[in-house]
Length: 490
Image (cartoon, rainbow, N blue to C red):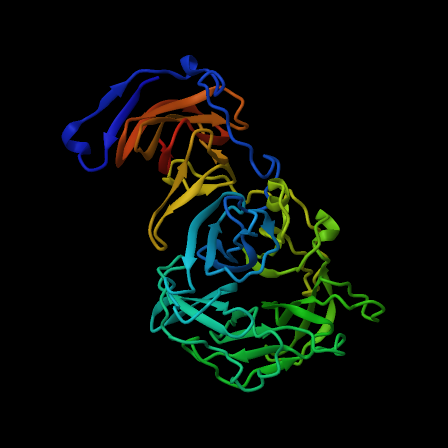
């Protein structure tokens, strides 16, 4: 096999430099002296959605045939002895964003620095439980990212794309304790946004259980938004959600409006047959209610996965199929730590023709890949179904690269090479020089391509002969420290 090195800036001027090597000569990763790092999920699992960081409270938005998922950036906290301690949520200043069209390979769009002195909203101290929406305003698509500033108010950022860059157009909280009908909301947080078919936006929020009001907390609210999505068009309305704890959701399913939420932990003996820490739902004829309780759609995730904790969800629809996004703690478990550090997952949401919602069964297998990945279009290196040992570098709203050390790797699932490709092209850089290997399926097979990346801080393109046909799962394995930007079959 021969490798061709082509620098990005002077490709036409300098031509090609050749280096020797071949797939047959390279053998396996073991022959190359590279030991792949262990992953936090199995190759047979599509849950959690990603493992390179934590991500809680997933808020989903459909746009352009993709799901964009925005999440609380759980940060691992340590005590004075260096031991992991319980998540206090007090250090969370960022929101994570990933997206996918096939629902198995997820593109990591990095952290959005929302709160704190270095954040977009410098007046905010935290950024929890995000949700997002898009709407055409003045003839242009505009995007809105709502978040809670701890438990005491809700803010909003705006952008011209679903991945930013984001801006603080409002300059202050959208909802505060001075907002009418909000002073007695225990937890003024957990926003959920919906743009109705007529373009009207609605925001649901709230939570907490006043003492002695476990069966009827009365702390959920919903409000109609102004046309620009940055103001309130009415006073917030109370949603009488039985046994409410937190975690509002708002969707239109058919001709009904669905409000969903997490139940509290004092549900023993209730006549509605709901359970604690579960996702419940109510329906209404009007988005502002009144809402009628209908049932439970997802028990606490601990029932399926063994680790109980707060249950936070969102509901999304793609091509007529409904999905439930929620969080679980498998990465925490795989790391051997405990402290309520959470990761996003997805399963199908059963919805009948009459709009009745069935019970979601939580699984680590997740959902099947909707369609094959097209390797003949450039694929960002930050698009992956699994990984080990990588981190992300880049600027929000710009291009990210995957940074890895020896033994780090990423995997893409279900790439369809059709009748065959004979060349792979990558874009990468390595300060000290290294190899990037391509291996099929499970890291144990023959090396299919061996890219020798010379020492340089500048990103460059490299091509290598690589015969691939049909549907493949490919692993890109780092033989040393490098930045990996993208790849494509030719």
